[in-house]
Length: 77
Image 1 (cartoon, rainbow, N blue to C red):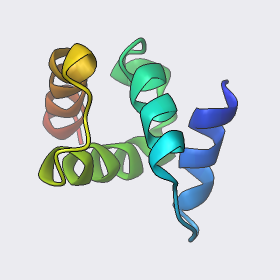
Image 2: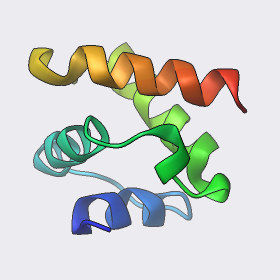
Image 3: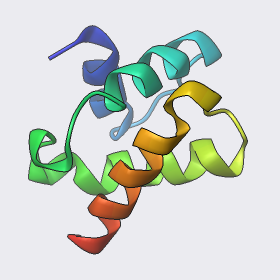
């Protein structure tokens, strides 16, 4: 697991992410599938992605992949 994804998982228990960390997390998330995310982290990741889209902080080059991941996480919640 990448350091960026580990940081995202840790934020579930409190903390903040910098814009640079978010870009790394978005890139990493764009390359994985929902099944690669531990069940106990799926809601956390879905909440993170929903927030990222709401704040327009998703890079255009990974938006399509992250939209698909978010949809899959929400459908299988």
